[in-house]
Length: 161
Image (cartoon, rainbow, N blue to C red; front, side):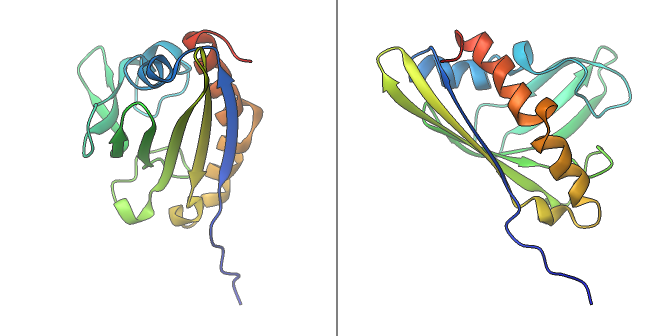
């Protein structure tokens, strides 16, 4: 008998030395400047990675040859406080177009004072990926997963506290 897995999530928090508006803008508008260059899922390294600034927008990479590879979709766009993305990247690190098999990444930006912002990231519903969900969880929960990615983001936003 197989075990039913529910509510698998990775949660990380970091405080950045930036006002909330800048923290949100760096995370969304400057996404390509801090996301690790070696983290891509298309056939060739991307020239650019993009988060379209609206609910329903795409989250994708584009190669120098113009080939595009989706990562997911923008589910909620509430600047400068909240962003929710679908994570359509399966356990083999390939795009999974079926929305029901995508996990979600929610990022909350909370002012901690005039010059700093607490950033709470929750990557949830990882079990939706079905067979191979453990690989997704292991990847995003590792030091090179959300922990390392958020450290790079914090450096781009103005440093971590």
